[in-house]
Amino acid sequence: MLRISNIKKIIQEKSDELERVNKELEEANQKLEKLSQTDSLTGIFNRSVFDRTIRAEWDRCKRHHSPLSLIMVDIDIFKAYNDNYGHQAGDDCIRWVAQSLRACVKRSSDIVARYGGDEFAVILPHVNRDTAVQFADQIRKKVLELAIPHPFSPVSPYLTISAGVQTLIPSDELSIEKLIRTADQALYEAKKEHNEVVGI
Image (tube, helix red, strand yellow):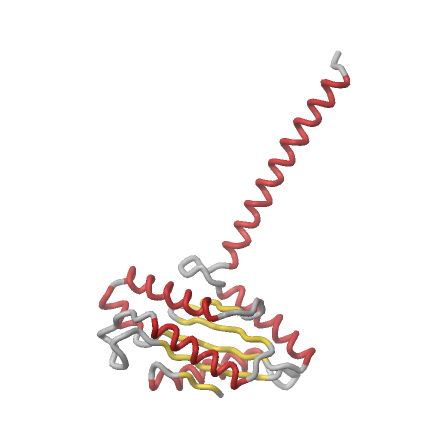
């Protein structure tokens, strides 16, 4: 017959083992959650996080009657870079640009995400248009400072980006889709000149 002390010891061992397994499971879940939010190439937030965040910030800014700024960023003449240097170099380039964008973001509420391909998005809640345009220009300069050679660009001997900026005060008459669409239009205008920032 088992003694009470032996039973307590067995219970303690099982309890310790269960605690260890639970801790390992929690760590694994945290890693999975991080992977589900992170772009595998760049390490910044992915499109899914962008979609969720833009909706949450739209609602928050709407409640506070506060501006919401969106910057769309695209690498200039990226196809020529990729075609001439290869996909590995193209991936490296996307990584470097992503890290530069992330380095510019100082507030925890600001989000940098890979929007797709060589395009990125920066969400700036409670930021007016002029400040957002200045921030976009700071990003543009930061990428230029990387001095990534791009002899196939007609714009600069180095890799450049273009950025489109839109700021709206969310309301029932406006939509997230309009914010994204018009920021994309501003980006399109900026890309006509290359290495430019256009704010609407």
